[in-house]
Amino acid sequence: MTKIMTAGPVQVRENVRMARSLVTTNPDVDPAFVEDYKALCDKLEKIMNCSGTAYIMGGEGILGLEAACASLTEPGDRVLVMDNGIFGRGFDGFVSMYGGEPVLYTKDYHKPFDADELRAYLEQDHDFKYATLVHCDTPSGMLNPIDELCPVLAEYGIMSVVDSVSAMFGEPVDFDGSCIDILCGGSQKCLSAPPGLTMVWVSDKAMDAMCSRTTPVASFYANILTFKTYYEDKWFPYTMPISDIMGLAAAVDNYLAEPDVIGRHARFGAATRAAVTAAGLEMYVKEGYSNTVTVINVPEGITDRQILDTMLEDYGIMITGAFDVLAGKVIRIGHMGENANYEDMVETMKALQGTLTKLGVNLQADMVEVFKRVAGIE
Ligand SMILES: *Cc1c(COP(=O)(O)O)cnc(C)c1O
Image 1 (cartoon, rainbow, N blue to C red):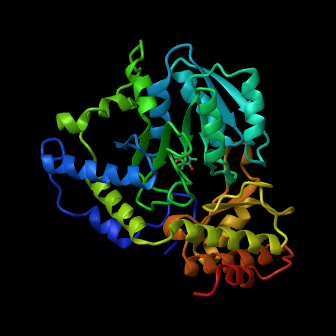
Image 2 (image 1 turned 180 degrees about the horizontal axis):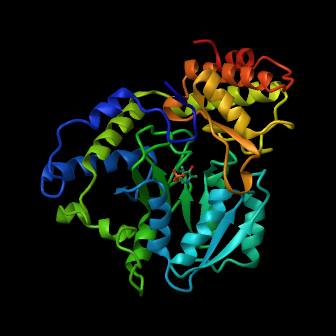
């Protein structure tokens, strides 16, 4: 069977799959469901150190990004769209779709944003209702220091919308400590549940901003406000996907049961980078390496397709290329969540080593050996 070592969706543990097959109640009318939903949201708030409110919405990760923009944007609002990657830039579409005026803050795609540079920019122009930024821009593997950037935005009274879909539960996130206003996550990345759910964490400030809008939110499904009083009213805006949520609850419990999930990601991220660079391969980013995905430039003389096909046909391991401006230029290994385990990672390194050697790439080190040394034998 194919082993998916992609940057999401990732492998799903059996207890999560089983939780999704349990007998369900009617989530519209059974008060027990409202309690379970609330208890899960409470856990999510605690994990992210959020004194605001977390909500789980029925829809894949993109829904959270759109919901944040739909709920905050009023016609004519200026929004700073921080762009050093494909997902970063993509927020401009959601902002303009809801009548806002996106202002692109475009920087080098090989480096993380710098907090001092951002401050200098805002010194000149800080008339923005909110800013959007991506924690880990998955196609390039760029990790932005949201803990430094969001406080700078807050200094200028600018709210922050952070897409941490591919970083959270693999990289540390401190919602309150970093002054985040809306944090977006998905079920299918580090948390390792199947795709289908969005999680949003909303600060009191962002909720106040939504409540004091003078124009209605131009969406129903993407309107976070419709969830605001679910607990008091025992009423959801639409029928909640209960099996998906039961799977998510099991995945959250898996996360909580493991003492150091963040440390595990750091270890496998470092080992993967050490292996590929020792072999003479080149990382796409030059700083800001994500511990959840490693993005490698395609070596000269071969194509991404050749690598991906050989990995799959000869070793049964699926990794991915990228899309948009990175199409054909890189390959990506997703060592996030359930994928980030010693055995599968060693197998992936072995497959990459064999694949590149077969395709005529002259590797300068044995990636398996380097990976094992840095990750520590298990
Ligand atoms: C995966 C991901 C999303 C969700 O979108 P997909 O449709 O699963 O691609 C959003 N943002 C980032 C940064 C992601 O990695």
